[in-house]
Length: 175
Image 1 (tube, rainbow, N blue to C red):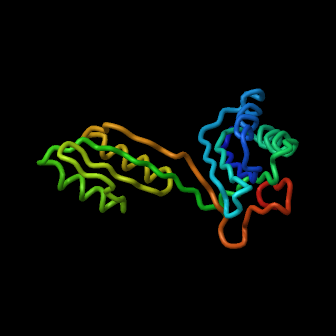
Image 2 (image 1 turned 60 degrees about the vertical axis):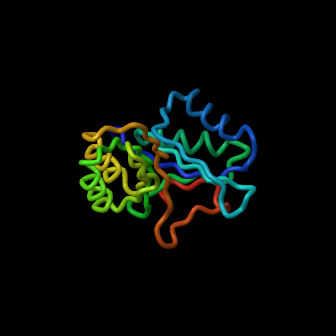
């Protein structure tokens, strides 16, 4: 089977060294991390990680097996694309001449982005959405000149009752 996108969600203990051990595991196994997001959950002792990588069924199985062995990992789940909402955040500082501001602001509105800073030479914008929407916005505003940009990487959550909980150690595809 060909390489496919794999979105892995983890619940881990929220303390020092956990991120290093998880990323080191990927490095030792020669699995590339396309994006990685980490943040505290509703429980301050637990963090949620979303890791995006690519691989076949073998790679997917190895990721689950190896992550499940980690002491600080509470739950490992390969997110089922059909039951998952995936979003990314980007903040872009766009060069703006006075004559171009109206066009840029029209694009901001069309993409449902938000202006977060406005100066004489630039407009800073935040946008959340699917990766294709983020990429399209970046492509559009690049013609004006991107001064600076920050992307969070993907984060994912299950739809409806498809949830990541501490009750299950490993779940493949939400089954």
